[in-house]
Picture 1 (cartoon, rainbow, N blue to C red):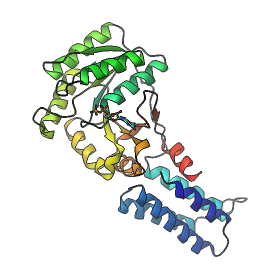
Picture 2 (cartoon, rainbow, N blue to C red):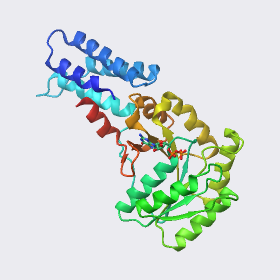
Picture 3 (cartoon, rainbow, N blue to C red):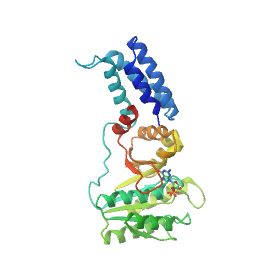
Picture 4 (cartoon, rainbow, N blue to C red):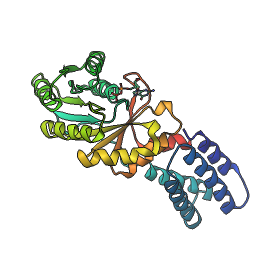
Length: 292
Ligand code: GDP
């Protein structure tokens, strides 16, 4: 994603000519790349405006060229756009730590539950996975298999009240010594209505009392991520966001920036179908990679 930015940076740093003109040429390239990555046009304009203002006003400190300083400004403004300076907090602040995963069908929620289990198992935690999805046939087996692969404990029931199942699962796994418990939920309600799905999430959240509600979003929905996050947030306050399938789209910038403006932190990104393909999302590292 945004591979052209690196070229634009190189061109800007090597190029001669009038500084102000070079800045504008660079910003045009940057705008094009951000829009190609599906970042909202208003956000694109506002970030490039901020960069331009600072680039023309700020004096670089001694020993730093104006052009190098300009790229530092670009870096800082892009980091803000993608969620800010703060590193994601992936280490559970206490144990047991209960994560409730929510999101629509097909977003990659069950796969992500397995990936999170694998992630925390590798960091030395005893992990338990709970399947409370009684709507999708196969959800139970899928999560059970993922739990085995990840080296995590598993609890599930194929039928019954999802909120009760989730609570029973949590109780049992805690008794078995789980330090991190991840509860997978349905992504589609029997009647196909989002309102009912959100109602179910609320019911599960009130019985499980999770430490963290994580919303799973498919990167390919782009800017629609914002309204999706807002709708879920209204029924169960979202603590963190996980964007999946970043490997499958060049337009992941839409979901990353749209979700960031909801105020919830993007904590992880999924970059493939296998268990190990999940990484903490640090805006600073992400932007550094884009700038090259
Ligand atoms: P759910 O309905 O939300 O539980 O979705 P699933 O976990 O069953 O995933 C739906 C599809 O997306 C599956 O084919 C997964 O392998 C795939 N998937 C999930 N996460 C990723 C990812 O980060 N990258 C890629 N390429 N595929 C993913």
